[in-house]
Length: 140
Length: 140
Length: 140
Length: 140
Image 1 (cartoon, rainbow over the protein chains, first blue to last red):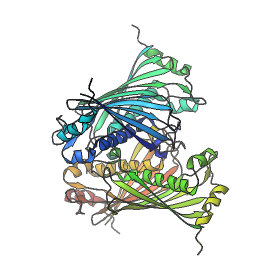
Image 2 (image 1 turned 90 degrees about the vertical axis):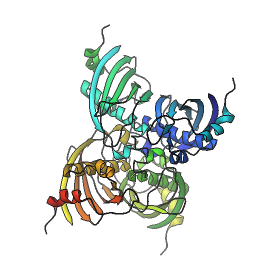
Image 3 (image 1 turned 60 degrees about the vertical axis):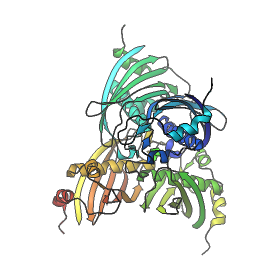
Image 4 (image 1 turned 180 degrees about the vertical axis):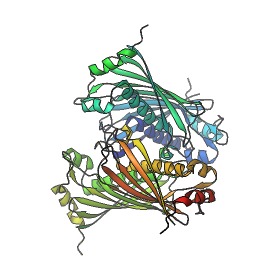
């Protein structure tokens, strides 16, 4: 089912996250998307920490990113996270990062899978999550 | 032009690279691909360090990865890197990571762009690189 | 000269920063101290970014940390940073991290050195910094 | 009891590990020491992975480092790790990193504690470890 939930957070590029090119290292965005994702889930009313404690995990199975412009040290980035679809056990997210001048830094998408902690097998999303996400269903 | 150059390295998953799921964190593979890429270039005869010293850099503009199975702490991973195409200023790489039991962990691809250090504008690849890569041209 | 300036920030442990022990990896605290340090300098009125742009850098020359209790994923940590002394070109900081239950996670200290970007040689701190830090001199 | 066991490994600085100063970021050395430590234990005949699987972990309780000179991208570093003392549940290590020109980059020391996985309480080191470390006892 298609979903339309969006959440925006801000995050500052750390010195440790730069590389000698003077850019935020391309591999560090995966962390930023994770922070965006976790805060999006929290604002829907689902704590990822509690999800894991209940025996369900949400590992990433696919990840794509396009970089348009570099982010620099101390930049205050805006990370817009969208939950776009629930397809069986799979949950899809889109991301867009812009800087303080509204310049587009990168866009990305990830696919995550609800799995049982014990055996790492795909499972249906928790009922509470389905309930919480219901208001954001796309009716078209 | 299509290219067919391949290089394989081994690399051990560090404790710092695991997460509380007990997996190698999904964002850390970007570093592994970078190590694979740098060693592939070195084995073609191009030191990335010298490239940067000569005023040319090679940032990543696109990155896709599919995860099939987790890698764990202390796993000795095989990273196979292929240089697949030179398209103007853009250099394309494919990657495949397997573990000691030959299980496929993930596949990925990246697009990098030769840019001038001074202004970050795309430039033609250095002549030395073209020369070095010549033997690996696909004739079909 | 002994100084007494203190600044506190909050920071949430990212999933990427945990390890398979389920702890925040011991090496990631260096990043947290850096964030604490940069925000302490900002609240004194000195942007570390501008300092670098003016040709002066502040690398770390010594670093000690004692860990008392683990921090976990999603913990909201309080990082208290103190600027304790300016000794020639050297600037000393102390840190203390506590969690939401006021449990002490770790304490640390670092020594940083003002150096000239061109040659990485120690230099006197910028006059603006001396001016800004003046009100926090310890008179004893 | 004082110990005298030493092991040396080599490790190349990754691009991701540099910062915009052009240095290997000060916080990344913790990872290098961990790699040195794990390989030192392996060469004594103790796999850290198996230790954890047997229900015992070895978190770091103290960490000190002094930086003498920067390490740069692509530097091939030598990491010399010494196991210096077993004091109850605590195991002490010293480290020394040099570059290809034999320049000293940094020295460090860490204290680790054998703890039971279930309750994170200190425990005596496994008998197998005591046996393995026996030949390296200092008799003075």
